[in-house]
Image 1 (cartoon, helix red, strand yellow):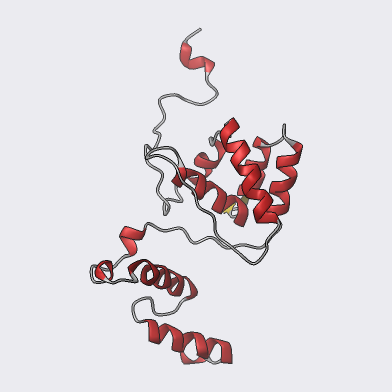
Image 2 (tube, rainbow, N blue to C red):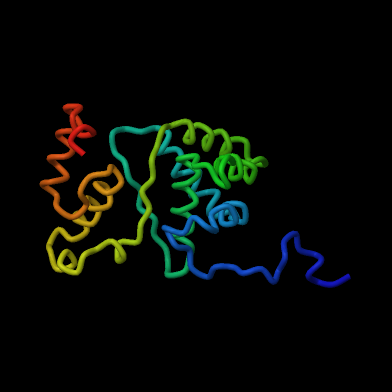
Length: 178
């Protein structure tokens, strides 16, 4: 028997060294191969306690050393909590929940979290930032608004135009205007 035959998957397959927020091509493999360590299990349990007991505050801080998997965890959670469909019709949550089958409490907490409607917006801030906006005091906010407006179908570059489009949308005349 060869060592490579001990593994479930081909060991000579390409493996991305860096997780990219906007890379959907490898998403199925990223979720399927995600390993829930004891540390992640513990932190995920804490996170879900807060997530499932929403008290008007949203957001979470993920910290860790360079290369520790922060972006990977964020990407996995965003797709799982949104329950995005992979490969056309396979729910991301279904793949992830299989990893939790031995921890009924964590699995139950995750199922509850998945039932909460959510939408994730993942992007690389450096790719979305304009050269000008990097020098502004509110550069980060500007990038977030740009991406958010773009997601909603509004002008991403001119905030007051996006606001105008939003107002028209609320009045029910934006589609006609477009």
